[in-house]
Image (cartoon, rainbow, N blue to C red; front, side, top):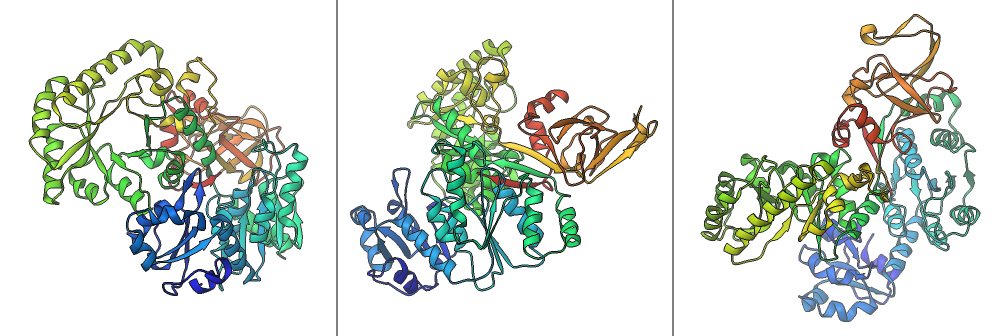
Length: 627
């Protein structure tokens, strides 16, 4: 859309520097991945921040089109390069940037007359949207909300994607208080309404469930039909939509059967942000937080989790290897990134992606100084690892003198932080050792600090340390498994901490049949039945991360609210469960872990830790992000 048309819609009195063709809208200055000359930035007021302060950053990256509130004229004029920005950019001056964004999206929506499905509810919006998009992908050119873009900002960004080729649009809408849905209805204007389950979630600003329901129904003010499947089962809701679109029952069953072969890891980004906020509440406002997103963010998906962490207030991210840092940079993540295990062959990639290496030996230090010097760099940030007692990697007290000499004898690198790892902060039996580690670390850090002419930050506490040794938080802490809802203090019975589970792994029943008494189940014939039983097959196996030790009654899954044992050996792609007494049918949902089957319980059965199970979930398992 030409910027002259956008001006006519939202800011008719503004002057144009040129008439660029705008294809992309941007509301977060950290996420500029689209061509700068085709992108329009909306400088929103968010969380007491005026987006106008980020205009110079984007201008220096080539952006020349901005929507700025009139009240921010003085702020923009006070920014670096203000004169250059004002003379070389098109700035559309508006009263309210969010209102302008929504107004523009509503205009864009009015240009197209294809079917538009609008989805709202308390639970299931994103799942139904994703399933419908997959079920209908062969028959329509579809535009849908990315991830869980269902807010006052997310909805207009979603609708902006519509174009002349769109044959079907699927958008979700979420609200947190009275009066919000009318705005979203004007933007989405659904022709088909879908209402999922209405529950207590995010209900603090509603007087009752009935009021909440009435507010959500306002999305469908101009819809031709509203679909609310009585059981609120996501699969049946999708079937009802397909039925309305004119599909016959045979086609619907065929499409649903294909869909139900999926195993999905649901990642609740709202719960993740809540957990980060909880850990931050334990720390001083000045204490920084580095969030661990190594190993594909513990199996949850490092790009989407990192984007969430940017908004949740992380100061640093940490990955294991250079490739992970590269992937985050390619996705537009701009937070500082520490590479915890920098491979000697990847130092150039670390520098190219503006990542910061962990330096744990003299050899690693010499190698990185040489690599950075070759690029002509000075004061490149590095992070010094201290071995305070875990005896894995790091410098010891006897090394500090030589380390300081090497650091002071060059100007290529500069120490950004000094840190160490605690070996047993989550176990009371090791509390004395933990305290001795902290003391050793401080001794080493003090000695190094006394020999350097500049200040560095310190960090030693992990998730368990934040909860149990908060007084030693130093300048920064590292948050890992705690982000995903696992509390060391709760595990030890010290308190009931308000963490929320982030991950739920679900699959569906492929088949259900009666197997007679005396028959065996699965490879190796390790499970024999003493009586006739109903046996279901689920499409998850050890290649997906479902451990073989769960087989032969070693584990359970939940079907229709009942725990069902795993029978027979777990196969590479499939597993069998005993669903006798559940009235289960093909297509029913099966929970591998979640609210009523905690991941900690699975870890206990395998005599392992939650980290191992999460990071073992295969990349072929689809991730769906909820918020």
